[in-house]
Structure formats: C-alpha cells, structure tokens
Length: 600
Image 1: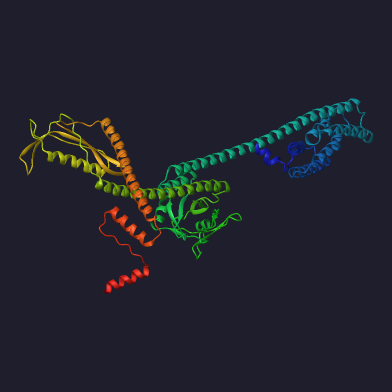
Image 2 (image 1 turned 30 degrees about the vertical axis):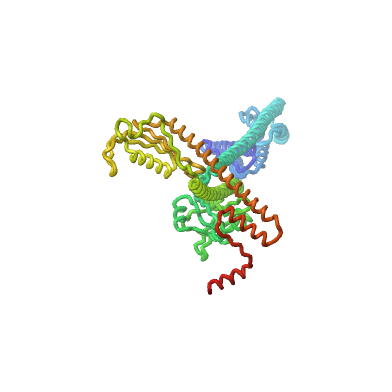
C-alpha cells in the first residue's frame, strides 16, 4: 500500500512538510474527482442531466488534473487555487434551501485548509464563506441566513486553526527532535568511524612496534651476520604482511649492492644467481645507498614497451622513482628502499615490496627506517665482533705459540721436568706377590697423557687384570689399574699434565674428585707459571746488571783504544769467549772489503 501511495501520490520536493501536504492534497483531489464522476454517473442513470452542472463538472475535472500534475512536480500554489475554488463554488450548492444536507460541505474548505496549506488560513476561509453566503442572499434573493451558520463557521474555523496549529507545532518539534537525533546519530557515526579508524591505526602501530621490538631483540641477541639478516627479513615480511623483503650489503669496493638475504622462493632464486645492483641512480637500492635516503614507489605501472628494463612509478612529489624490474617479482605494486646507516656510513639497503598500491605511507616508512637503523647498527656490531674475534683468535694463537716456545726453552734449561709421588706402603716391583709390568703401567699413563694433551681436557682410563707378554720379559701379571690425567692449561696452551694413578683395583673417579683434581691442576699451572716468570725476571735482572757493569767500565775512560779494549775484554770474559774482534768502518768500506775477500 505504501508503495502505491508513493508511486501515485509522491511529491518531488525536499521539504518534508510540503511533501506531506502534497500527498494529502492529491488524495483530496482524487476523492473529489471520484465524487464528481459518481455524481455524473448517477445523473446519467436517472436522466437528470443539467447542462450547466455538466459543464462545471467537466471543467472541475480538468482543473483537478492540472492541479494534481503541478503538485506532483513540487509546486506549492495548487492548494490555494483549490481552496479558492471551493470557497466560491460551495455556496451555490444550497440553491434556496439552507437545510439541505449539502450545508455540511461548507465545513470542507475550513477543514482542508490546515491540511493542504498553512493553518492560519482556516479563519480567512471561514470568514470568506460567510461573506459569500450573505452576498449570494442579497444577489440571488436567497432566504434569510441564520446567524448561527456564521457563528458555526467561525467556531469551526477557530477550532480547526487551534488543532492544526497544535499539530503543526508538534510536527515541527518532532522534526527538530528528529533533526537533532539525526545530527546526534551522524556525530555518533562519525565518532564511531573515528574510533574504528583510531583502533585500526593503533592496531597497526602496535603491530609495527611489536615487529620493531622483535627486530631489536634479534639485533641485540644475534651476533652472527648471516643468521641476523635472514631472521630480520623474515620478521619484517611476516609482521608487515609484505610481498617480498630483501637485504643488500655494499661490497668492499663500494661499487655494487649485493643481495645477502631474500624472502620466499624469489629471494632464493635471486641469491642463487648472485643478484646485485650497481650503486648509483640506476635502481632504487643504488640511489638509496648513494644518497643515504629512503626512496618510495607508491604505485608501479608496468610498461611492457620499456626498452631499458625500467618501470616508471607514480607517487607524491619527491617520492617518484624509477625502479629496476625484477622478473622473479611480477606482482610488485609498491616498493620502498631504505638505507642501512650506521656511524655515518651506509652499509647497504633494505628493499620492501608489496602487492598492494600505496602500501608505504610516511608512518610506515618511519617505523621501517627506525628498524633498519637498528639492523644497521647490529650488522656493524656483528662485523666489529667478528673482527674482534678474529683478532683475539690471532692473539690467542700468537700467545699459545709464545707460551709453547718459552716453556720449551724453560724446560730445556730447567733440571726438573717431571715430578713423581708414590703413596707410602705401595707395593713395588720385587716385593712379595705377582710382578707388575712397568712397561704396561708406563704405556697406560703415556696414552692417557697424550689424549689429555691432544684433546685439552681431563681423561680417565683404566684396565682389567690380565697377563702381559713383553718381548724383553717373561709373562708378567697386569693388575687392575686406573689413571686420571688432567692437562695443565695456561691461557689455552697445555704446558704439561698431572696424572693420578691407582693400582690394585678399578677405581671409579667421581665428579667431586675430578673437579678437585682440575682445581689443583689450575693452581699448579698458575704457580709454575709464576715461578717461570720469576726465573725469567731474575735472569733478565742479572743480564741487565751485567750490561750495566760492562757499560760502567767502558765509560771510565775517554780514549777510543782503551774503550775498545775494555769492551772486548769485558764481553769476552763475561760470555767466556776465546776470541772477540771489534772492527770500526762504514758500510761502503765493509762492502769493499767483502768484495776484496771474495776475489782473494
């Protein structure tokens, strides 16, 4: 039903009140037109045609059609014309009988006025109708008009005006409330949209900060460069939902940017073929490294006719770029290149690519650049750590060589190179009982010592009782025995061993005993090193003292020949030399003398 009303009675207007009044007016026109048609039908059936009335009815139907069409187009004047028509036409319906039922029609314009026009028209309409009745009475010799009719019209007009005014006021108040409610709803919707946008932005920022924290954690905990860059590109791609992430490092000649890590199968293929880009303006990565600035391509338009292999990009002023097309990444729609800056130097660049246009806004670029700077510092630290480790390893190697050399020299000159201790009461070879093979015992200890020095760790070994046949001895019994050999390590260099030997039974070495032996070995190592240093210090002091004495004797005279003789005598006496020769001359004379000796 509502659809039919909107279809045939709807008004083309923006004002809600005009639309409502227009719908009511169209309904009144339709009802009035139906009433006129019924009257014409009844007159035709009963043969009571009045030509004058027929002409008026036909003209009325035509006028109603024009008014209906104009109201449908949104015009506001048709209701006023209709009221004027009713006010002028209705008094003629009484003819000479004021008690006709059609007298009720006098109330129609008064009732219609507030429905189809302004509410204040009810009083003028009632007054005009009353005036028309008095005018027709005088002009057409109607019967006298009852004053009650005028009073009734006036009262009806006042009541109609008050009711319509109240309804119209309520309608206006309702409209204001509806407008206020609509405005509140719009504000609420705007606030909701703002809250949702803020929530999405906060969620995105939270994700970005979480990714930044993950990258920072990896950067601070991983010192291996290859592992670090692999984990960084994987984290950035996963946290930001990107199509591809690749990390380039500058080669030592600072001519090429070499791909060191890439995500996905495309990254593996580019790594396999040694993908690299020349530093300069030929690519986004090269431009970013050369200028130490980020470069963004917000929307990449593919150009199949490009002869140089480049693809033009569209973006805001200052962010347009020319990027190098990569066959392994056909779905890239937006890309950014971010320099790896650390301590005033660009180490490389990070390439981030998305399959969505406009994926890298200023905020995203700022977060990515912050992470990239952290990665650059971590890579720089990893490089420094690797260099430091290499230098330390070289230093350790040099130190071990030095310690090995000085200890060999010390042991060559020291009368004590081995100290043995045997528990009192231990049965030795020749006592009552089976004879134990010293060769087997020495072999057991020697093998354990060799293993401890080779592997630089504590070695525990043992044997079960049995019979040993030596080439130089008869069959001899071998007792059960165990050995615990602890290496004497001095700053990573093994300078000896400490062996604990148990004979007569198998002895399981406990963890406490091994820890005690290692602690004792550590103290022994430090002690013997201190003794060696003290011996070396004493020898150096003696040498310095001897040099001082010789120098003092030489300086007792100013005569050249006496100085040379004194120096020869003192040096020969001190070093125990049978002959010593000191010869003065220039380098050229020495060369000439050598040539002469060679000819002779």
